Amino acid sequence: MRKLFGLAITFALGLVIILALNNTVNFPAFGEVNLSERISGAYLSEDNVEEVGSANLVTSIVIGFRTFDTLGEVTVLFISSLGVAFILGRKKQKRMNLNFKPNFMLRVGSNILLAIILVTSFYIILHGHLSPGGGFPGGAMIASSVLLLYLADDRFRSNIKGFKLLEGFAGSLFVIIGLLGLVFATAFFANYLPTGTIGNFLSAGIIPIIYVLIGLKVGSEIAGIIDNFLTEEERA
Amino acid sequence: MIQYASIFLFVLGLYGLFINKNVIKLIVSLNVMEIGLFIFIISIGYVGDNAIAPIISNTQDLGLIYVDPLPQALVLTAIVIGVGTTALALAIAKSIYNTYQTFDLDEMEESA
Amino acid sequence: MTFFDFLSIVVGVLLLVIAFLAINSKKLINSVLFLSALSMLAVVAFVLMKAPDVAITEAVIGSGLVTSLFVFTLLSVREEKLK
Image (tube, rainbow over all chains, first blue to last red; front, side, top):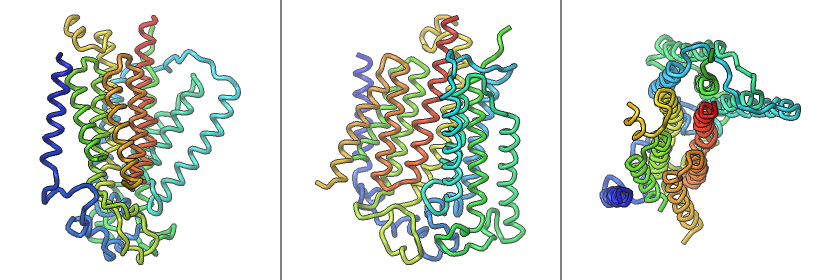
């Protein structure tokens, strides 16, 4: 009875949302949007695209126009990984017992697969300004390669101190590159390197550098979270 | 169609938050709400059947019709934030289990 | 009716059905696995709406990392029950 009542109320809420949004002036119907009336039309103009120099327009917004916003989002991820470490990793740690013995094929195969995943992730990070992808999915791929190592060997523990150092290094270099924009140009995170031709590998100024740093930071943070979840307190 | 589906996905997540008493189920419901919101925000930027993904090869291509890149940029970062918040919620659920030996909110109240 | 309309109807109905199953399953592990399937369907929806960046990110994170975190939490709990 309670379930049916909840279902009825929430579906009524959904109908209200649909009716409220249905084809008003501010919210046109699905697929009938005119981009020149929106703020996004400016991002597609030739002057702005050439100013940033990135072929992938999503990257040119994430790292070009809204870099300060991205800095905030990376900070949120850092704080959440700090919270996970604070809650789960207080005492002396050992690996959680997964109750299985890895055989020879699994160990060799996981090493080969690890190399393939790492190469793919670095390709995706380095081509973030040319093709779909970038620092966020590439960093998650680095973290999933660490996850593969954890799952293939029940005694493995990655060097968490090294990941923490890498994360701090990448984060502070990200801010330092932004501060250098105040020296060489006029604003925080201004693009002071030459942008080059759109579509070349060496183009778009500071965007590939920042994306590599974001990839390393995201990857080491999520790897730290995975380590916290796969370890537990040592019982006496 | 897919826009209506995303709104009802959000609403289904809210329904899950109402009826479930299990902490893990609550986090799953939050994730369902999150996915519904992502699809809705992406669907705002869809321009039409003849539009293409916002990746250009040179500046002459800018005359073509592209989908809106701004909602995609917002969702791209929001997904990564989502994994951070989910991990934090699961860590809290794990420490709740260590204290009360259960995930159920009702049993927690009885044992407290 | 175009191909896009047909695919979006199929994906939309499947999204709702799998979300309902994820919320209402009795077993926790089934719920988590339906959440992973929901993420994969969301990837299909993102590709349909011409958002390749978001699709790659969701495919790596939503169906891989988040599912593994849920499964690790459930595993650690089941181990404590065995002791």
